[in-house]
Length: 210
Image 1 (cartoon, helix red, strand yellow):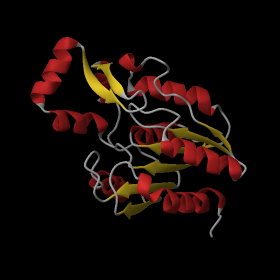
Image 2 (image 1 turned 30 degrees about the vertical axis):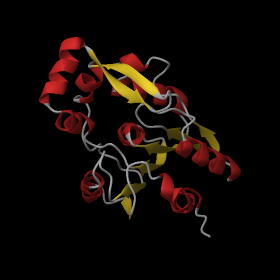
Image 3 (image 1 turned 120 degrees about the horizontal axis):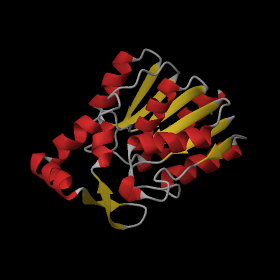
């Protein structure tokens, strides 16, 4: 089995979740690829550019996707358009990205972002503030809040997530009968529930249960 792990916004292939899932997948005999979704150019990041990078990494054969936060949203978007994706696993997926961000930032911040063409955000992988262009938001509105996924889908979300409320995953599940949602007593990062998430992921992908 080939699996792509898609990291979150301002993250990288070296994130704790990416490393753990990649290691466990390889131990289970899967080929795991963890692409850097900014393509080395965080300032010009967009949803469409990330989807193009995923397409290049996925290839034409059967593949499963695991995505965290924005990576989860990207996994759903990509799966909806590519039937070679067999299954997807979503960790706190950032559904409704282009709708949520203006609400979270507020009109003044968005107006400043647009006027300046870019704004500073904290880049978790780099451990510093970096600028990202307004094209991220403008391109984001071209994509559905809730992609029309038909593949079997496993979703993990923290009930105390204050970045992407779990109601977004609940809304997605209501629209997609093949989606299985597990809510954890956790926040957005989900790093305190890695073991139960992996156990459920292994069962979902490989039919393995402890």
